[in-house]
Image 1 (cartoon, one colour):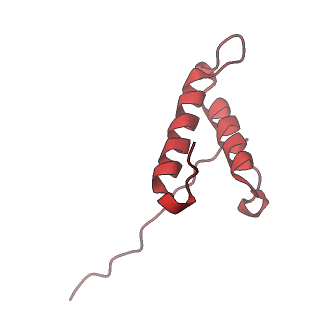
Image 2: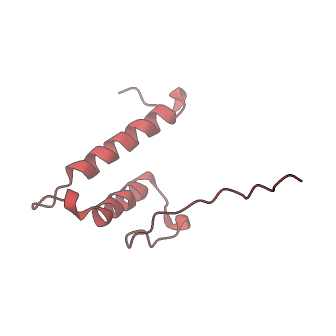
Length: 79
C-alpha cells in the first residue's frame, strides 16, 4: 500500500511590523517600506546609532535588482 504524501507546509515570517493585510499593499513603494520596517524590527542589531541601516539598504537594492531582472525587457526603461 502506497503512503499518501502530505501537502507542503509553508511558514510566514511573523513580525510586529507586518500587521497589514496583503490587500493593503497597493504599490511597490509601500511593499518596500513594509519590508524595510520588518527588517529593522527583526534585526535591531543592524540599525546604527544614527538610525541608518546599511544592511537593510543592501537588501532593498538587491530586491530591486532582482525585480528588474525578472521583468520583461520591453517594460524596462532605457536610462
